[in-house]
Length: 428
Ligand code: AMP
Ligand code: GLY
Image (tube, rainbow, N blue to C red):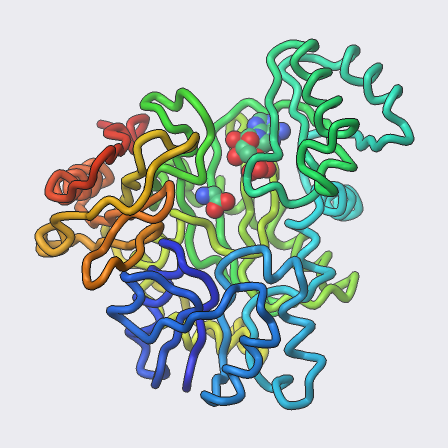
């Protein structure tokens, strides 16, 4: 079949890499893609929110499956847009309908959903301009640290963890009164801080059944030892040593099953990936957030680790046979290490030539996934904060990380930075 991937980052490069391996895939297109995906399929110059342009393209090329990478088109209703047109309703769009995508698009929606279905999460309250004064009192009486979240999508910047009340009050004012994130922070969720280790768990669902397709630990801070500003993710490892059968059973029984049953009971149309952002608090799992897509860079480790054909799984999600599928994982450990532009997650310069991509890819057991890259003539140049990520496999996590670093040492561009301690807490 002809398949279209929407997006142009490292996650989409990994999706393209995996999907292209399937014998079900005849032609593969990526909109807009990047120089990495251009080597696997055909890049199409279409923006991810240009639904009409994407629809025309799909009709012209006979696309039968669309895999949506980023959250924005899902929250904006790409699923519903295709379903509403008789000419495209047959296309298997992987992602939730607009209403179900609110699980990621609105923190308040997801909190209410978890409350209705008794899913463990941090206690919370929500505020707008209307009950602003109560919000101030709520913060003053709250234990520290305290977590403030803009309700809507804020490009990964809408969460503030304040260590004192003054900072929390100032952030609260900025979000609600000064509209720091525009409409996204008209409503603010204030919640209890959860102490623990984070882990990202991924399921594929058809809205009734599900399969867990992988999990990973993401390293979000820019600095080694998990210090400094939050980023989109600086590296990942999979599998995670503490994700043993006992913890995974708790995650399935208390979180995944009630979530999928909740979607079904509430008739929320959801045929796609569910990303459970979890906190392991002394062996007990809590939900920090839902995302309605795969993670980045989690995808760059979970897809290499997944042995099962992804296109077959996505087709099974469409035709209701997910229950009958068998998920298999490679026995090795996987790590990915992200190389970023100097200055990221603050301001950074772009369009620096990237050297050594070929040499890095020649190291056995590695894959270079491109993210913020572009072409300048035939040359690949930097074009974003997170530039590329090297995934490697190994007999254990540490050897996977070491191999990824060895490959990264062969790559260079002006200002390049990567964390050298990915997986540090699992060092033996
Ligand atoms: P989010 O945008 O919801 O992914 O939040 C960004 C990050 O903030 C998460 O990955 C966590 O590291 C942290 N975070 C969010 N909520 C909480 C919480 N209730 N307790 C502790 N950390 C949190
Ligand atoms: N790596 C975290 C995310 O994709 O949201």
